[in-house]
Length: 408
Image 1 (spheres, one colour):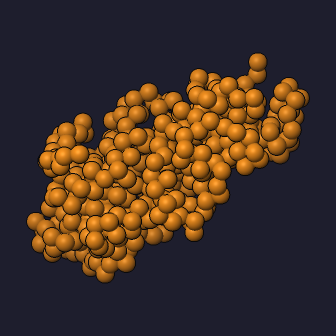
Image 2 (tube, one colour):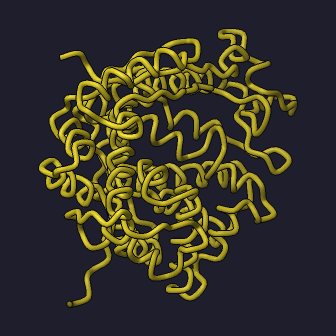
Image 3 (tube, one colour):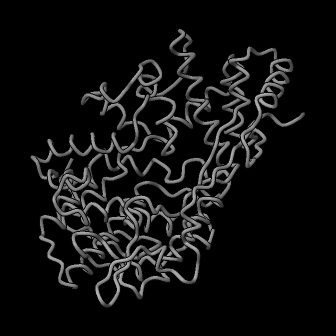
């Protein structure tokens, strides 16, 4: 194929035109590993609740890079020394921070691969790209892993007020239509500074920080932890688990070549060599949707019904409680399913299950969001706030859910 011209700008619905800053970053965006993110949804199964939530990890990565560029410009303007090499490394690290997400963002971590987080897979991708680009990502990887001597650079990528959160809250709010989650990212970035190698917010930005923390809490309860979204994601994980269970018991299932590999193979972090990483890089949402469209006709009742539930949005009933669900209640619902469909207890557990969700909008135990006063004093925003009790929002709230079939 002929050599392509370097793309200069991307039109983003949130920020307008995003400039691609440099040839290396353009080449990384152009790479098949990164282009795959166009086919991985940012919010998993949330579109089942919010029909507009079809944006992708590709959208989010470019948006986070745009905000990082703005943040670096603000800090340099305020006299913080950041070299061109450090700036490029920050942009690369935030661009690639989510490259390890599998289909539907989180479902793969708990079903097809074992004991592996998307952060670990992201790092594997970054290291593979570093080899391919002759060590050009070495500094980006060091900052990403928090092994670089300047701590505030890592905080811009991974912290309670990082560019990742500033983008996804605003972007997810936009695509879901949940206006309560919208944050003023420009104002927050304009208020950033660095004191003693730590990221801080200037005191006059306190109200924007308060709004950010409250918006995060509301987005988690209203969107990310919406009970219908929770049951949809749990069903997706169980579809993949059932498919893997059947495949490893010798049952033939229709699936794409690379999905078939992960169904037939137990993969842990130590198994991720270059070949396994290449196979993983071929997986996206379409592999799973395509497979479920075949599995809806399969002889196995569990696989067939789970696939139909997701394809037709005919989900399980879900109840949220403040207290743990009793074993008596769980057993009673399982017995009903076993009797009605002539299933084993193991098979019934695919349709009746419990779990918990938690929401902690702000953490005071580590990596706090600190304000700097005009006198230079640094203080935790939760202690400085007089408008809202942010300390209350630092308490973790846990709820328990029970999923079970609707009554016919």
